[in-house]
Length: 235
Ligand SMILES: Nc1nc2c(ncn2[C@@H]2O[C@H](COP(=O)(O)OP(=O)(O)OP(=O)(O)O)[C@@H](O)[C@H]2O)c(=O)[nH]1
Ligand SMILES: [Mg+2]
Image (cartoon, rainbow, N blue to C red; front, side, top):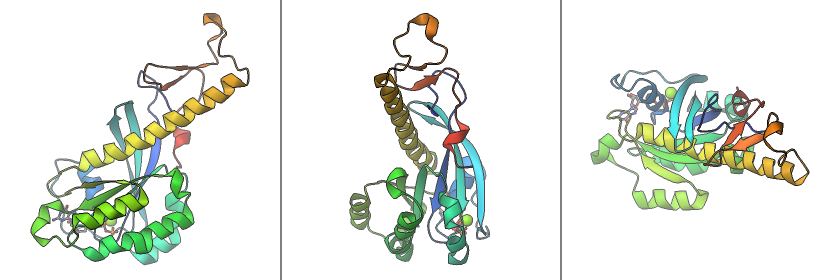
């Protein structure tokens, strides 16, 4: 039944999203900038070994949601073993490359998209492409036309970010989570429609509302007596 709560109240839904991309592109730095916006970029940060995750409340046009952000290791030796865990029940993926490192961009089609398709039902995942280190424009190696082609080919949107200056960091996470949340609300609405067609309790009047699911003016599901958010996440 509905796992997505309304903009009008209730526990915010929780969605698992995964950061993917080569080692050194700035995945950990982006998460750190999101969760601690005032802390300066750490240039001596160690490579992620395995998985780390953080939870962050984010705004969407349909209300607040919680993102559980899985920061993964770009290094092949960790990623190969852990990929199934990364993708289990994930709802969204941020694919990150470094605009100053063309190899990290080529890796997206050569490595990461293939792995996404192998380990997850890629169509079920919301995806966002992020070109990080936009503060290093003078060292840019990845031209924007190639990025546009990639986005068209794989059907995803794109933002350039800087974990150093903070540019577009919050916007990137909010953009992805809004797509994830919209999909969850749409799926929840579809299920209610099917239930209604099957003779569910939809037209029973005010006195019979306790087990029904109401929609608010945004079409968000206000679940009465239903479980809410944590099941949306794979954790
Ligand atoms: N100038 C600049 N440097 C950045 C930016 N983001 C990250 N860095 C630096 O890039 C290096 C690698 O950053 P990480 O965040 O560790 O990269 P990662 O993608 O998490 O790497 P793995 O954990 O090995 O997969 C660090 O020295 C960061 O300080 C940015 O936006 N601008
Ligand atoms: Mg890292």
